[in-house]
Image 1 (cartoon, rainbow, N blue to C red):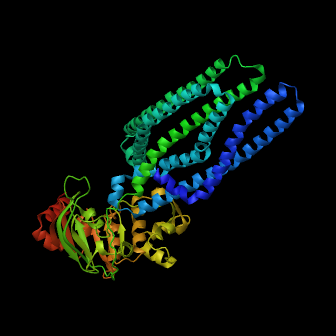
Image 2 (image 1 turned 135 degrees about the vertical axis):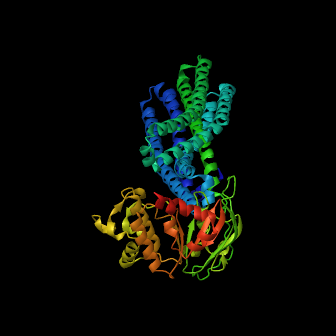
Image 3 (image 1 turned 120 degrees about the vertical axis):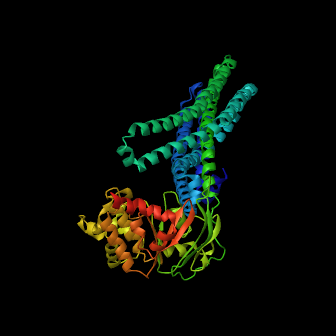
Amino acid sequence: MKLVFRYLKKHLGIFLLSTLFLTMEAMADLLQPAFMSAVVDEGVAHMNTSYILRYGLIMLLIAGVGAVSAIMRNHFSCRVSRTIGKEIRRDMYHKVQSLSLENIDRLQPASIITRLTNDVTQIQEFINSIMRMMVKAPITCVGAIALLVLQTPGQAPVMIGILAVAFLLIFCNMKIAYPRFGKVQRKLDKLNGVSREFLSSVRVVKAFNAEDEEEERFGEASTELALANTSALRAMALFTPLISLTVNFGVVLLLFISRHQEAAQIGRLMASVNYMTQVMFALNMMTHVLNTTVRAVASAERIEEVLHEKPAQLMPENPEKPAISGSISVEDLSFRYRGAGREALMDVNFSVKPGETLGIIGPTGSGKSTLVHLIPRLYDATRGRVLVDGCDVTKMDVSHLRSHVAVVMQKALLFSGTIEENLRWGKPDATQEEMEEAARLACAEEFILETEKGYQSLLGQGGVNLSGGQKQRLSLARALIRKPAILILDDCTSALDAQTEARVLSGLRRQGGQRTVLLISQRISTVMKADRILCLDGGRVMGLGSHQQLMESCETYRAIYKSQIGGEENV
């Protein structure tokens, strides 16, 4: 629980103030039975009305102090727990932002979401419990036992034995519940993963009429979570009543032992019973807090895993910031994804001159996307190196490198907000003229102006209210507005019709010489007009040259050409 105490130190003043009010509340609760005993044994037994009124007013004052202390304690505990929850989420989010894609792949997005939400909530509840109950429970328990011994000293050994049994049950509860609550969080990860996957691919599910299969998957994950929760809560359901039963047995035993108590000491017996009830309340409170602690410990370990995750990419101590014109060299490059059976890229070598357009083509799974992800250093090569303007990307300042590179992913990703806000992701200080120019170049302006509010039109999450081609054109415009030295187009025109794609590529060619373009496509018609073409297959370079050169020397390229161009001509 070092995580919790590390954050609590930042709010130590408020925590101590809350503890002070909590202690005052506990003392007020402990004093009430003692005064009640005096009222019964002295005031009621001797019909002393003034004594009853005087002590009654004191009890009322003590109750008022306890109520005010409880209000202040609740205020400060809620304030600190919510603030610490916010700080943990902020630090986790900042950490996740600093991690590479390899780290994200290992931690898994669904699990990260669970840790940012549910696990942090468990920590908040634990801190709230600390400040509301964890300090009060021991004070109440120890204080009630001490006053109980003072009230009925002869029964102290019996009461201590009863309490020893209760504490043993609490220890067993923690021992059994801890691994179960850790399993609950892992099952919650799985449920979030299934939910996230379904929601992100809901159109595919509906298109294939696979709602029943997805419902079955969700049901299985939900059932596993329910069973894990049931197993964890069963431990609580077993031990909490046993603890209450043990203390209640102590109350009955106390009454039995005191059955010959003198009438003049009935108030003392009432106080003893009241203190036993407070002990039971304190033990139940401690059981609840400890169960919360068990959950919080499991959640804290998962949060610590994220906060202590070592970045897969090591940043240089003195990063270089060279002037970037757009030249790229790839030397003896190999790359393997973590856990993969084979290398995605093997011994890749090529170079691109500034302002040159390099087409990249190959069968599915040939390593095209993996290759271009290494240039802005989204991943690091397993062997070999990538040079941008003669500088190894692993020695460059990442922010500097990526500020000169724009990537349009294979899957168009847009954010909730207006079209303008999405375009400004590429360049926050872009002028209206720059946005319009980028939109025209990406052939996006025509449909933007057809919307009711133009650039101020709202987009749903992921751009759900746009077609696939519209999303791709907006993504391209977002990249072009940055005016990067290196533009990476990862099959980003696949949803465009041939005429629109030709217009987009023609616009990019008119800007030839202004930027280096890496153009990935499955369609040979898209890359055949590039300055040079890189043909990949199985992670290896099969050929590099112009369209005509590859037609003469590369069997893989000729096979792709025949399957697309030649096949169509034979129809």
